[in-house]
Structure formats: C-alpha cells, structure tokens
Length: 348
Image (tube, rainbow, N blue to C red; front, top):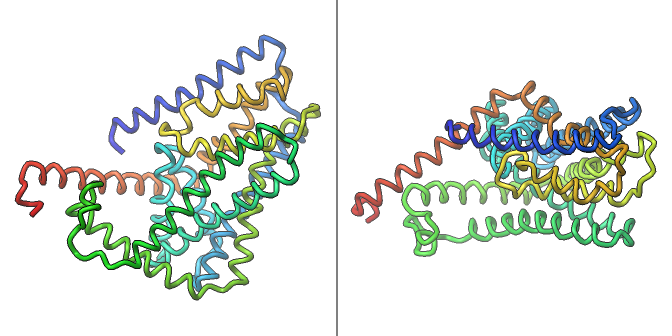
C-alpha cells in the first residue's frame, strides 16, 4: 500500500484503540474490572477456534463439491490471510485479494480459485440469512435489536447475493469487445473494460463449474458455514455469562453480529472506533458497569485482534503482497485514465 493508505490505516487503528481506552478507563473509575474468570476466556476461545475450523472446512468442502482438490491447511491459510487482509484495508477490501493469492501460490488454477471464493461468499450470505431466520424465531420478542440485526445483516446478505446474480446475468450476455455506452459512463472503458471482459469469462467458467457440483459436499459446506456464523453470536455471551453476570441473552447475541457485519461497510480499517461507539450505545446498560469494560475489551480481542495476530503469523506476508498487487492494479488503471484524458485519441 502507499504511505497515505498506511497512514490512514494507522490513524484508524489509533482511533479504535483510543475509543476503547477511553471507555475502559471511564468504566474502571466507576468500579468496573477488565479481568474476567478463566472459564469465560475458555468459552470465548472455544467459539473462536470452532469458527475458524468450520470456516476452513467450509472452503475445503466447497472445493470438493466443485471437484477441486484443496487441502485443509491451505484452506486454513486462505481463511486467516483473508482475515488479515480485511483488517488492514478500508471496507475489508483486502480480504479477497489475500485469499486469492494464497490459493494461487498453492497451485490452485485461477478458474478453480474463483470457484472456491465465489462459493465462500455465496455460502456466507446464505448462511447469514439462515441464522437470521433462526434467531428471528428464537428471539421473536427481542424487539428493536432483532429489527436492527435483520436490517443490517439482511442488507449485507442481499447485497452479496445481488452482486452474484448480476455477475451471472452479465457474464451470459455477449457485450462485444468495445465497451458499451453504459460501461463507459461508469468508468469501465479502455483497460478497465478489458479486465471486465476477462472477469466475465472467469464468471462463466465458475457458473459452468457450479452446474456440476456434488450436492453432498455442498450441503456439508453449507452446514459448516451456518455453524461458523452462529459461533459469532456466542462470543459475547460466553464472556459475559461465562463470567457469572446476569444479563439477557438476546442483546448479547444479536447486537454483536450486527456490529461485525455493519463494520464491513465502514471505510476505515477496523471500523475507526465506530464499532466501539455502537457497542457502548447498545450494550452498556445491558451488561452493567461491573463487566462492561472487560466485555468490550475482550469481545474486541476475540472478534478482531486475534484474527490479525493469527493472520499475520500464518500468512501475513502473502496478504500484504496481495494488497500491494491490488493497489498496483488500481494505480495502473488510474494512470491509464489520466493518459486517456490527456490524449483523447487513445479512447477512440
């Protein structure tokens, strides 16, 4: 990344840490603790480990469903590299380049890697919808928090599914070698259109592969996806209730899931403090002053910081190279656009 993006990332992380520290210090002065019993940490850690393992199995079994050979350890590196890339880039934009590069460097062909990544995103959205439906039934009397969760997570899942459907529809159309008028209007002329054409071809290959999936492995992968999303509901209840606090289960489970997926649309890496502010507004009165500071600190650790650490250890260099490559491509496009503006004949 450029120094400006690194500075933006550093400032965003400083905001995240600063807001957390402000809340923790304030609640400590009111008698709150930052330590939790060992069993609370063990419960939360179990949820995290289960989430990572099931997500890795989801990728492995999605590949098997498409008749692609992908080992578990490669899937694990892919998972953690994506988490690391997502954490250090705006709006989690570094996740897919990092995952793709891990797969590519493991010898997975481009078309097969795209099948795996498409399946991962599709199952993520589908399992989110499933979990939201289940919690809407189980916590049907939760009130506003349920409506907020359905709105945020439903919008996220709908967006992912909508993009997938749009990609399939466009990929099936013959749009020609020259960029059509609608594409030029949204900045997809020249080299951008060439890249879009290649992407359409890869999507067509992906769709053709999906036609021949093994439904047994696909069902197993979907099950793992539902479990991994459900584990994200469990971290905060594990910390708070595991510490012996008396708090209603619905807001402890539902609000954090909305925060995690809502943060995906925040441009600043890590949410820039927005997650902490939302956590304070929604859950301070629910958790109570004794455990609020500890709950915020450790929930953020088990849902954000731990993934940065694990991703950096397992595939940090690969993720950084993927982010840099994506940045280089963007700069090439920008340079091409600048050349086209200064030399109109190039566009013709």
